[in-house]
Length: 159
Image 1 (cartoon, rainbow, N blue to C red):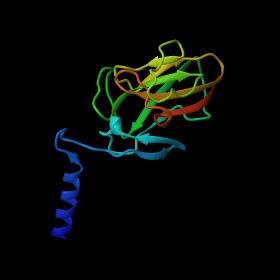
Image 2: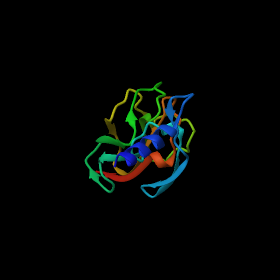
Image 3: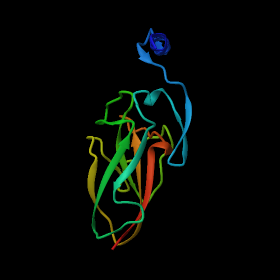
Image 4: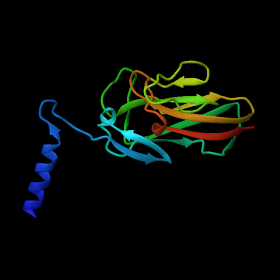
């Protein structure tokens, strides 16, 4: 047992770059929520395979409008304010009637691309009656998207 613990300690110690004093994360392709993506050093602080989800509303929900409450969820990363560039951090964006933003692209700022740079995890938006798609996109401290792997799209009907 002591030998196994020592061996594990040596393996872990060997994965730390002495010059940078930070763990090295190999590029690993993962599939999260049916989406393929690459887990790299920009999310090295993540403990779990990162993903985002809508806590509220759920996909397929019929909601009473025009005010619609939206609650964001994130796993494996931490929500932080704009400008925070620590590994494993980012903030939410809500895209109304649009899809995910490609990895590395800046999330636009307009009426259909809402930014939550203060670290908010919920909001209330106004939507007209009808069918809508909502895409949650997680991005870094400079609004650069983590890509489809860190997005989630639901469809709702506002009555």
